[in-house]
Image 1: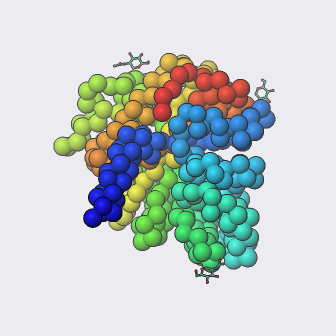
Image 2: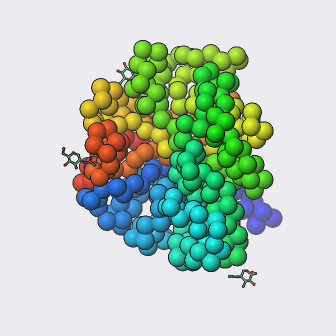
Image 3: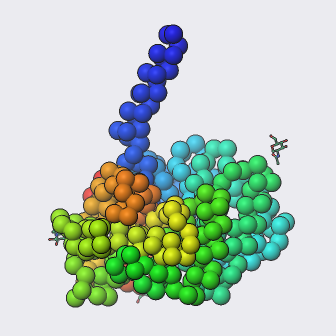
Length: 338
Ligand SMILES: *[C@@H]1O[C@H](CO)[C@@H](O)[C@H](O)[C@H]1NC(C)=O
Ligand SMILES: *[C@@H]1O[C@H](CO)[C@@H](O)[C@H](O)[C@H]1NC(C)=O
Ligand SMILES: *[C@@H]1O[C@H](CO)[C@@H](O)[C@H](O)[C@H]1NC(C)=O
């Protein structure tokens, strides 16, 4: 009797704890890109993330120094692979086994891996045909090592040939050839698909037709009506266009993670300002925290990763170098509250 009351109380406390602290941290992460020669060491970076209540990261490849610093940090990790490794991961079981033994197995008991992404923005490209075999090969290698970690891939908005209004969302024929079988595999295994979704680039390229508040997540009213659904922001519209496009490809209710989104704070293009970057990211965080989901998938928290943690000085000159929330000194580019 006492025991069961105790466990009910414990369950309630856990529920309250998750309600008050878990949901905000639960859905938002950052991309820890390292295309720079002036970043702090991983242990300092992890301390920074924890001090800001950032609980999830995505890394683009299995950087040994980052992997070694992660155990015990509690950070959830999306682990990427080098694009150039895909043919061997899919074609050579020994290579896939070694990849797991080097990059995953030694850390897996102390690092919660959210998923492993094979290929970043490879559809369309000449490597697109290597993605599904690589996912299958790595899945076999993970199972052989007794690891239960989802495998997936990361696509960008260029897979869509139409996205306005969201219900018109359609995969381009070139993308559908590769992405539909991949989405079927993910759905069958209950794995998520990663989608990089920026509102900055469409807005930059079409300021005449796209309202700035719609692009910056700070519109206070519905801007785009699509049948029964009303959109206040272009990020929700992009994600829903992707859901609609996958449905037309025959795959419904696949879990989509927004693996990259963000806004540059500098670099030359007029909309790339500190004020706009702060507005975009803070309003996005505030919306995601409330787990409102998208108009097509209401109430379903959308896991979202901001690009990026740091400004990266070895990326292409211009705005590409200025997507960071932090300078390499770890000073914030602008205040942001997770
Ligand atoms: C996987 O788990 C099974 C059952 O728990 C065990 O017998 C086997 O040795 C494990 N294999 C590896 C590679 O750890
Ligand atoms: C949205 O934010 C931008 C940049 O901070 C600002 O210029 C604009 O007035 C804001 N719009 C609304 C509707 O609050
Ligand atoms: C960026 O511009 C600087 C100075 O103009 C140049 O030295 C550097 O090589 C450029 N970097 C890249 C990645 O293009």
